[in-house]
Length: 220
Image (cartoon, rainbow, N blue to C red; front, side, top):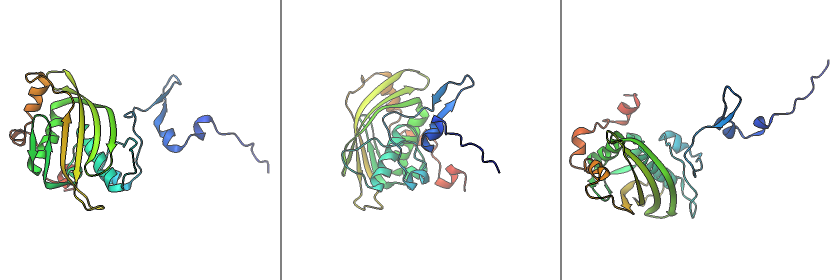
């Protein structure tokens, strides 16, 4: 029986499978890479899949525990406009979110704040993401470009984000997120007006937040 000659693999076939999935070929034969957020590396933690995490983590000055990685990536998702009840279940019921314009205390207020951010922006781009300090709180640096719906204008916010957590290592939850803006927009600017409309008192009245994880994921 004649053995067919061995055909050497193409360059594409020698790439690791995850990289192959990132590469596509157009009808003209041009190789293109799928768009991914820059500067980030992918985590393989099963929890990332369970919580449907969209963001990946940048390098950090020291190793993160699996729980720290999950909580940090979930916060990046919220700032990128990907809220979910499952991710927000990682917060304590009495947790606090604060930025230069608002303080949202308790689940009803902070959940509405994150869903309201998604509803009020037509586009959110995280231009820079860095982990500055590993500990409690975790210290992040974000440079985020927001495009406000209806107005259509863009605003870049450079901020330091502090993520406070409970002490329990494996079951730690978020107790507070502080978003400290490096540059404050003009008091009467379009972005400030849009963000003031997301204040913790008015938001819960007009932003629809799913009642449960099951309702949001269609498993109720």
